[in-house]
Length: 108
Ligand SMILES: [Zn+2]
Image 1 (cartoon, helix red, strand yellow):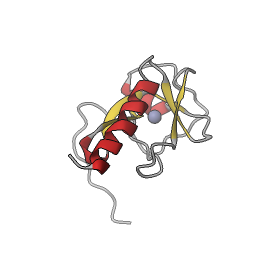
Image 2 (image 1 turned 45 degrees about the vertical axis):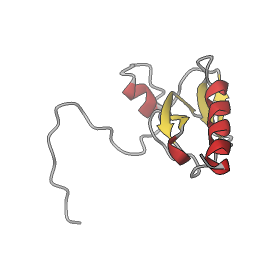
Image 3 (image 1 turned 180 degrees about the horizontal axis):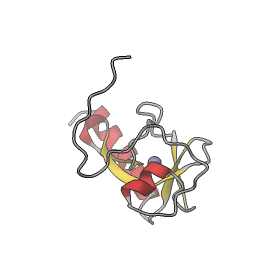
Image 4 (image 1 turned 60 degrees about the vertical axis):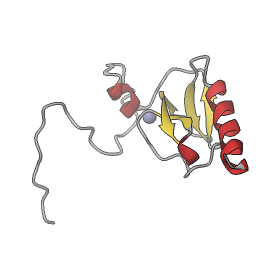
C-alpha cells in the first residue's frame, strides 16, 4: 500500500477511536448533535459520520467532533424512529415514509 493510503488509515483509525465510547457527533460549531454511522471515506476507510448523511464540509476529518450530548438532529432521530424530536429544528427535506410510492413532482 502507498504512504498516502497508510496515512489515511491512521487518520480514520484515530477518528473511529474518538467515537468508540459511543459518543455522538457534532459538525464544527453547530448546536445539532447527530447519531454516528460509519461511512466510506477516502481510500475506502471507515470514518464516523452523521447517520442522517448531512454534509460535513467535504472530506475534512476535522469538521466533525465527538459530543456526549443527546442526539438532537431530527433526521437522525427519525432514523432511530424516536418520538422525542425537538420541534424547533426544521426539516431540511422530507424523510421518506415507509411504504410510500413514487410521486409525480409538479413541473413548476
Ligand atoms: Zn443527523
